[in-house]
Image (cartoon, rainbow, N blue to C red; front, side, top):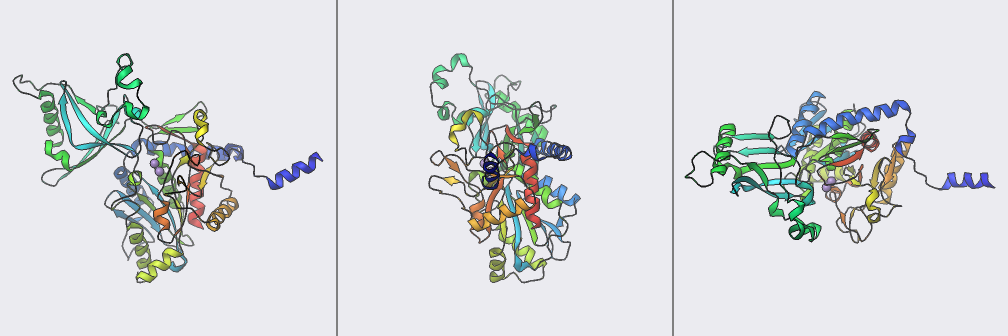
Length: 466
Ligand code: MN
Ligand code: MN
C-alpha cells in the first residue's frame, strides 16, 4: 500500500527541488563561475547609458556589427544611447516570426534636479528627485556616486562618473541622529519619515577664501566643477546625472551562493539575455534581444518599451531579409513572433512571508520564474499570458532541463506591479514574463541566487534557439 501511494504521488503531484539538488559537481562549478562575471558587470554598470556602452563594446567583440542592410547576420541597433537591440538573422523565412527577449536597463535611483546646487548651513548640497519606486530611508547614510552626462552651453557633451573608485570622493545623504529624531521621524509613518525634498547630497564644505561674499561654499564647489569639467551652474539644466549606490556587488553568505548588488532589477535579465544571444550561432528563427529604458517610470518616451523601437527592429530584420517592410508584412511578422519579457519577481523573504501566497510565490534558488501575470488588484496593468503560450514555454523548459518555478507579485489584495510584457504583447507578439526572483528588490543592494541567475541564462538560451 505504501509503495502504491508513493508511486501515485510521484506520478501526479508536482514536486519542486532546489536547483542546487539538480546539479552535478561540474555544473555547480559552472553556475558559481557564471556568477563571477555577473558580479563584475553589476559593479561597473550603474545606469542605462553605461549598460548600452557595455553591451555595444561586448557585442562588437562577439561579432555584432552596427545595423546596415548589406552586412553580417549579427547586428546591433541603437536607440539614442539609452536603449539597444541585438539581432541574429535565422534560417527560417521571416514570416515564421522572431524570438524576442526584452529586459530593462534603467533602475530605481535619485536624479539630480535641473538646479541642484545650493548652500545651507554653510554646506554645499545637491537636490535630487527620485526615479522609480524607492523606500527613501534606504538611500540615506550610504556612499553614493554620480553617473551621467552634461551638455554644456556650446553643445559639448561631458561624461560624469565619480564616486565608485576608492580614489574618488563619494557623496552621501546625512540622516538625522537617533537622539533627536523622536518627533521629526520616529513617530511618523515610514513613508513620511523622510521627505523627498530632504534627499540632498553633501557636496562640499570648503568656503571660498573671500569672507565678504555670500554662498562661499557653493562658489568654491562651482570653481572645482569649472576646473574639473569646464562647466558653470547653468549647465546642470541640460544634464542627466544619476545618483546611485557607490557600493560594488559582492558574494553573499558563507557558501557564496548569493550575489548582492545595486540595479539587479533588471540588469540581471539584461546580462543573462546578452549572454544567451552570444551563445547562439545560426538560429532557426531570427532572434532579437532588446534592452529598454524608462521601465521604472512606466516605459514612457522614445527609449521606453511603449516606443516604436520594437517595430523599428522588426523592420530592420525584414529589410535585411530583402523584403519590403510594408504594414502587412510587419503585422504578419509580429503576429507570428514570440517573446519573453525578462524581468525579476519577488522571492519569499523569510521576515515578510505574509505578503506572498506561498503556493504561488517564487523561492530563492528554485530556478527561473515563469510569471503568467503581474499587475495589481483584479489583474490591472498586466499582460495575462495565454495558457497556450505558457504551455509552449513549459514544454520547452522541461525538454531542455531548465529549472523553473512559477511566481506571483504578492497576495491578491497586497499590492502589485507591472513589467514591459503588456507593451510587447499589444503588438500581437505572444509574451510571458520570465526572470529570476530577487530579495530586497528596488533597494540599493538587491540579492539574487547564483542558481537562479544561471537558470535564467539557460532559459533565455533555449528560447532564442527555439
Ligand atoms: Mn523590473
Ligand atoms: Mn522595478
